[in-house]
Length: 95
Image: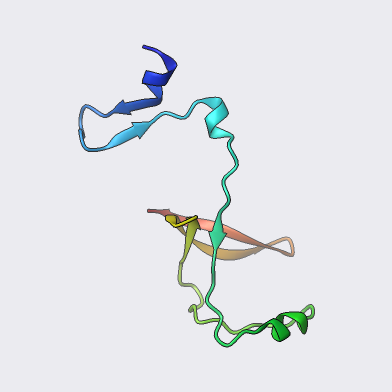
């Protein structure tokens, strides 16, 4: 079986599910991810006035998972977490 045939294989147990086997070069392709948090009435002037320590109120409840997307495709649900004074996004479940 060629590498191209191995890259796209249909599972014999679930014929409607397509399994994609990522080869090393494909697995390292960069993908831009986006976590968007809705912020009510936030303007450019508010952005310019931000200083360290300022808190911005969002429409997202604390502890509620946020969608993690690449383009128009939602890949997972995530949450913000602070790691060593850096803001990080942790994946909580896959879609």
